[in-house]
Amino acid sequence: MRNVLESGHSGLVGGQLEREDEAVLVALIAGIAQGQESALSQFYDRTSRLVYGLALRITGDADAAEEVSSDVYAQVWRTAVQFDPQKGSTTTWLVTMVRTRAIDLIRKRIRIQERETDLAGQELWTCPNPNPESQHVLTEMRSRIKAAMSQLAEDQREVLLATYFAGLTHSEIADVLRLPLGTVKTRIRLGLVNLRRLFETQGMGL
Image (cartoon, rainbow, N blue to C red; front, side, top):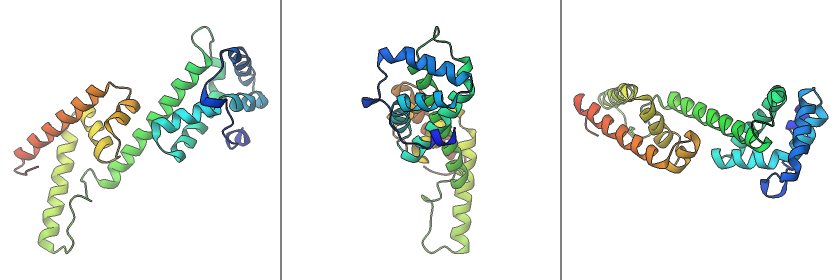
């Protein structure tokens, strides 16, 4: 299966699965469920452009799209036996996996970014010529920012991290989290309002 996942993206032109190919894809999934690697290879060739293209659109990053694609086909290999054509098309099955894997990857990267920045926006709070006094002030600011962020509701903290630490646009966040754009904007606005309130209670302006 490794060689299959490392091959190029040779799927259908335009990334769309032709309706007449559905029966072929269903048959290939049945073969995959029986452990046939040749069936997985053929399935990959027919669907990889769709999978990679959607992963790239969601993540906005080629390396991330490659990782998502590999994860998706590994999942196809593991779960083909669970596929039921009566419950949905192969396209729907694949798209659901791609979106789930892409969202998981972006959330993982947000958590990594959260740890790397210590939830403190260190790049925003720097001093070109630090001395013991200024360094103490910066450390205190970072500690307060971290404490304030930890008190936000999870949904507000998530969108703020995605915006200010992962660098995603509002539209990208809506796509990744599968939320209406208005909901994302509302959560960001509420998160900033609550951050300001928390900073004011700590005697620190924003």
